[in-house]
Image 1 (cartoon, rainbow, N blue to C red):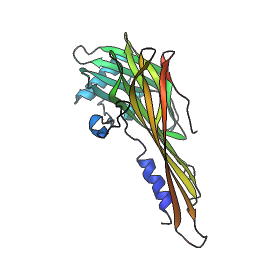
Image 2 (cartoon, rainbow, N blue to C red):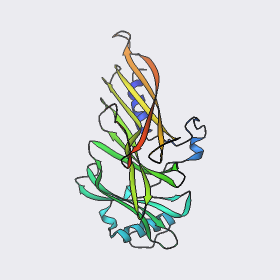
Image 3 (tube, helix red, strand yellow):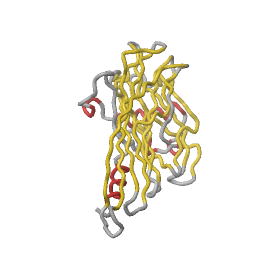
Image 4 (tube, rainbow, N blue to C red):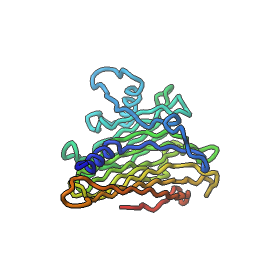
Length: 280
């Protein structure tokens, strides 16, 4: 058990991008994986030949319509996903590099569009300069989340999840955040900005002594409304494990685990869902 704490950290970091979904306020989802698979595979776009898949085609259309060169993008993070509630349209994420020093340090503009399959036109778009940064906290993944975020009878949102991982083994940290977008006229409007849906953090002496904390937030849509939009309930599960040696000559670690549960409510005010960022 000597290296158990270090192994746990590595295991959790490798699995740090967690799925969550939406459900009714008073019912926890037992079939979350069936409802929504949040994994959005990377798209490889041929530079000199026609696209071989629909995902590549819609990404190429987005690049052309936005007048962005493929070489100016962080192509490993280009994403496309068909809207399950409007299958004639696809969501496309184009991360354009605004500054880059190396493969682990770069800043990207967010370009998020909805493409009509029939007309090949952009029907909704969102742009944010310098939206995503990868540095000591390395950006590891971007995914499109199309879980049923129905905020009122005529409004359904989709999510963009971004995952980060720290480089420290003594102070490990990883986090996945979600932003929600809704269509309005010809724009996409961000109504939730970088809400944490999973987080792992800890501290250790690389031998035994230390702690780890894993938090998972499940977002649920309430039937109650504020300013015409359903409240969002965040159900948090926080698992904490502490490690210590019983005596200095014993190589084994003693573990103590605890689990806490918290509930928070996000209200729609001033055009967005507001929250207080905790635990940093």
